[in-house]
Length: 617
Image 1: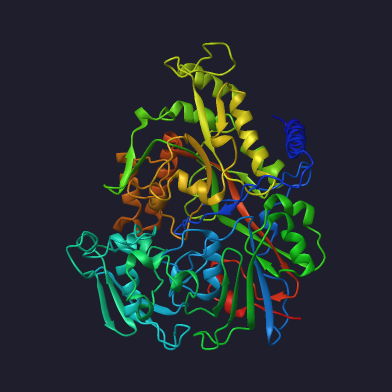
Image 2: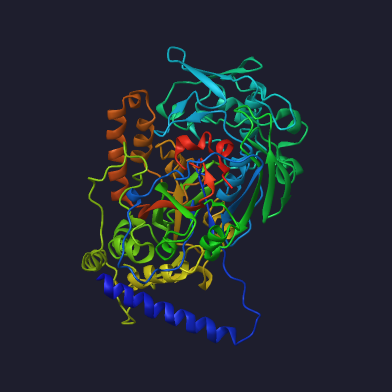
C-alpha cells in the first residue's frame, strides 16, 4: 500500500472510531473507563512494553534518531537546593513493588532507579566496569569472579551495604517461596550448588563465598560471556531489614510497598500508591552528595506529557510517545534527547502453555491454532511495518527484522533476509498450505475446513493503540484471515501481561498478541526464548534453539567473532521458525526542560545521572 493510501485508510478509520465513541457516549459525562497503557521491561527484562499513541496522519516529514543527542544541551552549573519533578508517562497506575528483587514493571523500575542501584557499573558496550559501587576481578582458572564493595556504600538508614546483603538477595530470589520473576539468568543458574539450593537439599548456595564484609566471590561451574554483560545480579537486599520477613510475604510487605530502602542518591520520603513518590537527597551517598535536594515522581498522561514539560509541570519524563514528537518538536524551553532503544515491538504466536510443575514451556504446536509456521509466515508478509513506522511514528520507529535489535550493533545482523510486505506472497502461502475460503464468507477456513477465528490480544495506551490494532487486523483480513480482538477491546497493561503468561498462566482465549521487549544489556536471548524462561510467552522450544542458545554462552563465545556467528545463526533460525516476528525497532525520544543539566540517557550515563542531574534556575 502506498503511503498516501495508508494515510487515507487511517484517516477514515480514525474518523469512524471517533464517530463510534461519540454515538456510544450519548452526550453523557459517564464515559466508560479507558483502557490503560504501560511498559514492561524484562529487564532483565524485565519485562516488555508497549506505549502506543496518536497517529500523526501527516507523514510528510520523517525524522532519524541519528540526529538526536542523548545528553542535555545545558552546560550550566546546577544551583544549590534544586528540586525536580520527574514524570512517568502512563495512563495507568504504577504497581508499587519498589524493590529490585520483586518488581516486574518498567514504571516501578523507573522509580527504583532514583533511590536504589546496582553495585555494578556498565560501559556503553554493556560490559561491567569498576565505575559502580563494587570493583571486580575474574579468575578464569577457577571459574570465579570476586567483587569488592567500595568504602562508604551505605543503606539509607546508615547501615553499610555488605557482602552478606548481596548473598542474601541470591538466597531470597532462589528460595522456593519466592514469588518474583528473577533467577533464571546465567548469574544464578551457573552458580555451584544452584540445583541443590533450589531443590531444598542445601541451606546455602555453595558457589557464594563471603570473604569479608565487603568482599564476595561467586564460583560458577564455568564462566560465560554473559556474566560480564548483564548476567550477574548486582542488587543486594538489606538483610537487617528483610531477614525476619518470610520470603513469601516480602513482595507485599510495607518494606517493599510503603517504606522501601536503597543505597542510591535519594531516599523515599512518601509513596502515594500508584500515583507519586517523593524523595529527598541522601547526603551520605557513596559518590558524594547529590545536586538536587528533592525529587517528585508522578504519573502523567501521555496526551499531556509534552505540554507538562513545556510549562514546567515536570522537568523530565521517563518516556515519550514517539508519534507525538512531530507535533511538539519546536516547543519553547524544551531540549529533546534521543537514542536507539534496547527494545522491539513484536507479534507473538501461542504455541503451547507453561508447565509450572516442570518449570518450563509445554510446546505443543500440533494442538495450537497458530502451530502452522506457514500461517505465521503469511501473517508476517501481510503487514507493512515500514509504513507503520513512517505513518504512526514519523520514522522514529522502523521496520524490525530480527530478534536482536540494532541497539546491540555488534550482534544485530541486518544482512538476514526477512519477510517484508507482500500480500500476494501471503495469499500464495496460505493457498499452498490449504487455507481456503470454503463457505464463501470472505474468510479462510483452516486446512481441515473448520472455521478459523484468530484471537488477538494487544494493549491499550494512547490514541494510537486502537487504530494500530485495527491496521494489523485489516491487513490480515485483506489476505482472508479473520482476526478479532480478545474480549472485543484492548487490554489494560497489567491484565495483558497476566493473560499472556507472566504469572505462569496462559489464557487459552489468546492465539496471537502484540507486545514489546526491552532486551537488557546482555545479548543472550535465553531469558525470553529459552525453554525454562517464564517470559517465553509463545511457549516455543526446539533442540536447535536450545543448542544455539547454549553456544551463545559457551566458553568459545568469549571469542566475540564466534559469538557473533552463533547469534547470527540464531536470528536466522528464528526467522525460519517464527514463534514471534518483530514489527518495529524503537527509539527513545524524550523532552527535558531547558533548565535541566547533566541528564544523560546512555548506558554509561545511567551510572551517575541520578546523582549529578541538577537544575540551573
